[in-house]
Image (cartoon, rainbow, N blue to C red):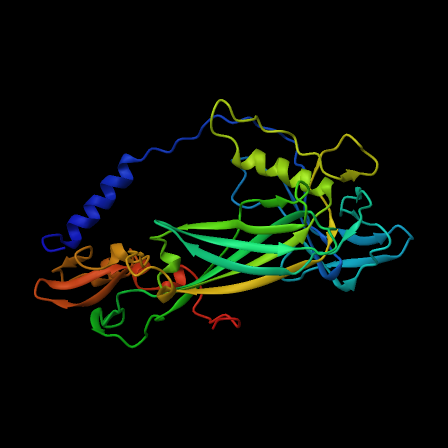
Length: 380
């Protein structure tokens, strides 16, 4: 915006940084690190199991991975199938593509690098029916994404869904200049930023439904996802891939308790968190808490695309870059010490203006900071 100059902007950043004092709240420290088992026994495909450990709030940003473990899928009859650790993702273990016998029960057993042995309870194999449809419904100020499914055998009854969202993102600004460190000058750009990228996000909430109180095993218009009408992921093209799982009653109860623990806290009248009691155990130490529930079922999936033209024309959907365009960009008149400007603060020159030069942050022009510029194979 006119009248704002680069030097003033740096001063403002310094003041903002100086006003923020780090706050470290007192937390309950616990030396115990519990094993976390994430995944399910895929009855028709590759089983993927992730092993990690719980950690304190001050312990870092990622859960410690449990590596070098030895894992097996075991049938009650004694047949075993080994899982192998992924070389690309430590702590993640994969089986071959398998078809598990639904007539017998299965479990996961494994031993860690420290010699501790664990096993899940034997569980019944469930067959997940196909997803009938994934639809969307625009309402006054939001978009609802709905799932429909049914089981003619009346054998599913308990359902869980996960989803993965992908959407296009396009910066609204295209730089015409770039900084040349060798000449210490602003010159016509030769290395261009991508014009389009794809962002991706997986569901973090627990989506459950059951049909035990219905005459038929039918789920109709379950609201899987609600997006506000201004959501930037709807600006161009949006896709959602839905995964569906049929659960046993016990696995459903585990996920329902997990959902309540993570989503139902907020008022004095909400239930307090409950300890999750899964079906995994330390074989030699029954008192050790192991977090997770191992079910055995197949997975079905369906993907849909939603384009801007399919949504109400009156919706003022944000681009995600609305704060990056005039008048919300800065100008500077300095022509010396360009390296101090463009070599330190991730500032990008845009183009020349009467006041000098228009500048912005790299976040406003490089969509790779929000995703990837590699087009997904499934993108239409």
